[in-house]
Image 1 (cartoon, rainbow, N blue to C red):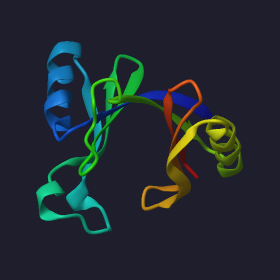
Image 2 (cartoon, helix red, strand yellow):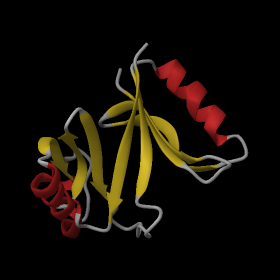
Image 3 (tube, rainbow, N blue to C red):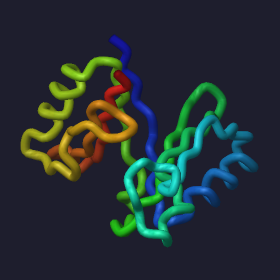
Image 4 (cartoon, helix red, strand yellow):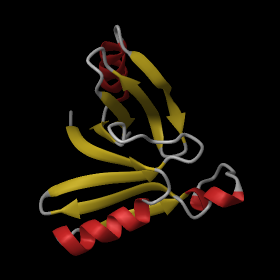
Length: 134
């Protein structure tokens, strides 16, 4: 089983600007970018150019980015930890463990980009996104 932890930045519509900043300052390389307009489910026109998902490589580390349309992000809530797994059952176990005495932000469910994706804040206040890759 493969398990990776990745810093995940959420922004209020300026993810592309943040990515460009990290490209210039940290010599980051853009690996992948997908806008809400690229998604198979419809989003309002004002969000179509916003980043739904991006991956940037800094040295040996990947960083993830997305804009959060309709859900304002506050300083302190803009960085989460993404847990990527290649096992759906293990993703469910980790999600269920983290939600104990915590708060489910979005349930663990199939999405257009993952067979199991969800967001939970644990009882200590740390927010995690869980992403099954297969």
